[in-house]
Length: 197
Ligand code: AMP
Image (cartoon, rainbow, N blue to C red; front, side, top):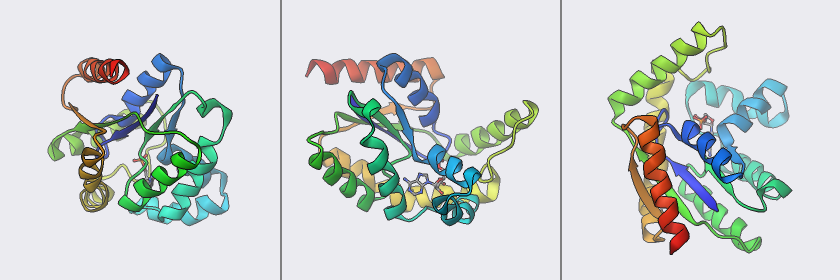
């Protein structure tokens, strides 16, 4: 099963993809996680991405497409993968289509998590608070200012992807404001229907 989880920052993509990857036995490919690892390791990609990410902007398409092209070619993706945070722009979506076609693969489903903006801001604040309370390091972009930029980037660049995938008959939408287990159940139902079709 090759899936995309789509939604604004704080919508719960990471949480749901973790559940799904355990259940389906396929990896979660989060460009955000991969970029944060690159920043931490100080790789050339990380150096390029660091400031952009901290400000809440989008890393150039060619950088993330390159990362995903390499990652999808790894053996653990043979049975499928869950894309979390990629694609985020129409050119990234087109690059993904081309990439999958070249590997004779296709997308099975794109699941959009819908959440009100006010709830997103509260969730991001909570995530920062909980990370601090647990003694962890808060993400450089989990603050009110960067969240505004991330939301603007989402509406300008990423939201058009719902139209793109609707037109490709791949889009399914769930209520991302429901409790986590309810969201998981909605996703399970969608995947069961996709499998049966
Ligand atoms: P995330 O963990 O998905 O919220 O991503 C954190 C940050 O990483 C984003 O705000 C962007 O700066 C960068 N990023 C992650 N994925 C992408 C992508 N597909 N395209 C561009 N930038 C990305």
